[in-house]
Image (cartoon, rainbow, N blue to C red; front, side, top):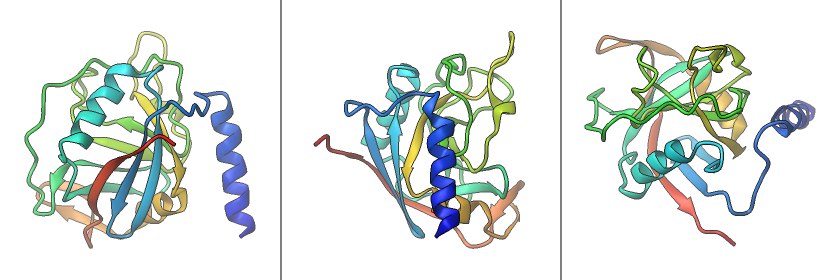
Length: 189
C-alpha cells in the first residue's frame, strides 16, 4: 500500500510541470483482458496527435488489438497488431508533435513511430518509467507525449513485467496475449 501511495506521489510530482488536469480534456477508458486503464489526453499541447488517436478510438480500431511489445523498466506498446500478430491497416501518418513541452515520464502515453519522425499512425506506448531520453532535444525529434494515465498505473507496470518471447519476427511479445478489448471516450461530467 505504501508503495502505491509513493508511486502516486512521484507520478503527481513528475506531471505537475507538465500539462495540468483540465475538465475539458478528453478522457478515455482502455479495457484490457487484465483490467482497465484511464487516460487523460492533452489536445492543447498535441492537437493533431489527440485528434488522430481519438479517430481510431471512435471507429473501434483498437478493439481486439494487443500490447505487442512489453519491456519491464521501459514501456508497453500496442495499437497496431491483432492477436495473430497481423498488422492492421491504418490511416496516413501524422506530423510529430514531440516539441510540445511534454516529457516521456512514467504514466504518460506517447505515439510510437519508426525512425522517420513523422511516421506515427495508430501505435502508442505507455511509459512504465521516466524515459526522458525519448523526448525531443535540440534539433532531434522525440516521441510525442499526448496524455497520461489517471488510473491504472499499477496495471501498466504489471503488463510491462509479463513474460515475453520472439514471435512473428518481433521481440518482447507477451507469451500470453494482453488484449485491448476496447478503448472508448468517457463522457464529460
